[in-house]
Image 1: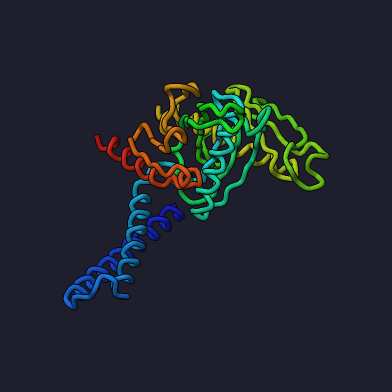
Image 2: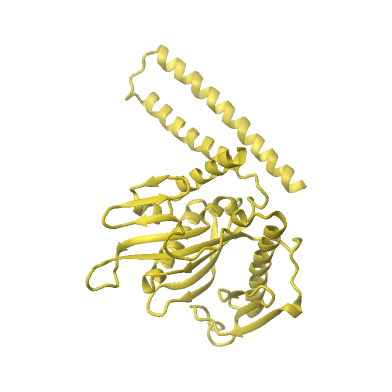
Amino acid sequence: MTSELARLRVQMDELDSLKRQVGDAETLVDLLAEEDVADDSPDMQALSADVAGLSERVRAAEIRVLLSEPYDDKYAIVTVHAGAGGTEAHDWVDMLTRMYLRWAAAHGFAADIMDQVPGDVAGTKSCTLIISGDYAYGYLKSEIGVHRLVRISPFDASHKRHTSFASVEVVPEVNDDVSATINPSEIKVDTFRSSGAGGQNVNKVSTAIRITHIPTGIVVTCQNERYQHRNREIALVILRSKLDAIEREKQAKELAALKGEQMQIGWGSQIRSYVLHPYQMIKDHRTGFETGNSQAVLDGGIDEFIWAALKANRKAGAK
């Protein structure tokens, strides 16, 4: 309750600050109009910069208002799985992982890779990362689903066009005080040597942890940390978060909102297409939002897609 009250107070202070700055900008516009100041004058340029910055703050505030569903304010556990496409799909997992890591960095969020299963030839079969930042889950839940890539394959000597798929799963990181409980008798814990880079302790002893939840078949691995007990703690957090998501889905029948519909990772099920050849176009099939600046999106510029999804969800909820 205390944290929720503090969050609401911060939002109210931000809204009050925005109102004051909007009023100041309107006053300055009227003054400059009366003085007939030239568009290229320093005062007008400064005003334009202020208005642009204010516009971004208004957008951010509006997004925060939209992020009002349960768990929206939590950190996000993001898992990217390769689908149809073989080595191409494994490389696509790497591209998507990089996209989310860059998005997190641009927003000042911490992002840590907890587990990464390498592909048979190149790329990654699956990757799990925790993105730590306020409302990370609220932002990234719109990424849940199948992502389709069309491009000229860098692995094909004949330079043919290939289509590959990857699925993105996002669940909120939950604390110990959640409804889901883990019965020690219902989990199987395996240890193994980490396959990633690390210090002298990693790769020499069995520091990596694999936990299998027998009733659901959920498997969680963590090998990022140098010590086994820490990997076990993180793996249990991820498992608890996934179990809590399932429990909430059963109780509220909101499977699509919390984990996404379980679809085949292939043709006809994609939420977004990334076409890099024969033209540049990234399109979200749920909202219709699209852009030709594909490189900017792959470099982490997914905010417009998130914004479109939040607005679409608000309209759907109002019906």
